[in-house]
Length: 91
Image (cartoon, rainbow, N blue to C red):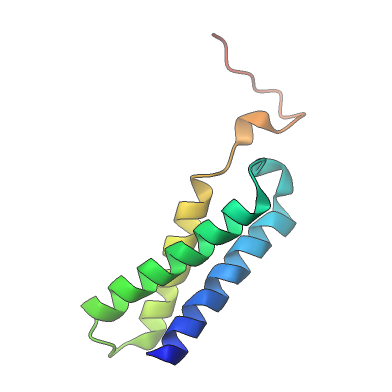
């Protein structure tokens, strides 16, 4: 249980920091918000999948934690604010 929790936190940190390194312009919010969202999503996703799978498939639980983390961090993305995209919303 403790090793799984540490693995979920590491996945969340990897997703959070990876997002900030690869796409910094898409996340104008506080950097800590992006990383905290990634870690929290990985913990919740991993916990739910571990409970649903009864801890029989830990690799699948890790995958589900990563997917959950990526999906919830993508909610924070603001591609409309990236300069140079040429796309502007009209009021």
